[in-house]
Length: 123
Image (cartoon, rainbow, N blue to C red; front, side, top):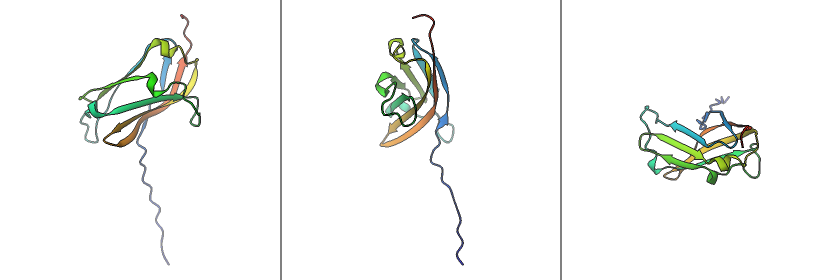
């Protein structure tokens, strides 16, 4: 009689980080990435994409990756920003987002979670 062993390999090591921001304010987030040994990654060769959508199956994002600017440095820090005018285009609500990189042909999702936009009192 043959025996069967079930094994699982989880390749999804993206971290959930929920974001709360305000509509009409400049969006700016700073994240530092390290490798498996804790050494900061050199992000100068990475390209980045962040998208915000109503849900996982939405045909079009509410904020496209082109709505953000990205600056990664050699000490592992990534800066993601969007202008206040861009942030005015998104209605207050709860959305989802993902942050993904490409480096040397390898695509990896680093962060995902909810993207909550609070209504601004001053416009």
